Length: 345
Image (cartoon, rainbow, N blue to C red):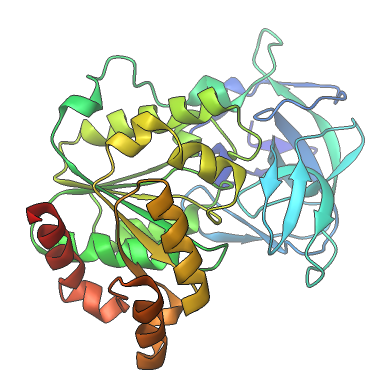
């Protein structure tokens, strides 16, 4: 389905795996709360989101009355919106630029009003079966158990949104890729958005995945078993490319529910070789390092905006007893040196 009512339909990033040929019918919109449902929506009032991301990450400008495919999903974003995967059959909101939509239930005080949409219908196949994002996830059932394969696993976590996790992860990927090593990367949690994955690809990762490859528009509100199953699926998919290094980013901060579920899971912890914690200041580094140590996770260094000044680095190192690495230090191989020293010890 490429057109509706004489207008071209815009397909956002969250739908990048969807086989559009299967979208053959439009059912009346109904009240539902199931994440992953594909709906046709019309832009009503432009607010916070003035554009969507296309499947490749290009910004696609929105205008009133534009028609696009929305993916019903939850959102947890302390700096933006808290949203629920709710369709009331009438109207809703854009929750994320990747095309995740639902109902805004709270927002940061700095946020403008959300972009509102009208639900036009539920996408279905020729037989009338409603289409779900889960139908298009990448199959990993035939792949061997990744835990048997030797690979260095590095996890980038942080204090909050916008703490530098993605940038730190990208610089780690860049250094290892420049050593002629195959690097796989994945963003395990968050809300569908291609921008971070593109940064990992630009850094040199041979394969980049996120939760959309597991059939999820976002991970907010996931059941623990669903989230661990997603992490296992992404891990096996990455290992199928036989990388030497895998870099994972976990969104939001250490106190966020899905982050805690992953970091407290024994299987996930068992495969992690090193953790880097990104934060805006030394105090956040201290609390983050303490929480990670108490959890038994192998934190090797801190980084993030705190490392932008020598004073910030000095404060962070004094409070944590860990090296605080600037992006330049990571590109010079300092993190890799620390990891080798840790492994030798």
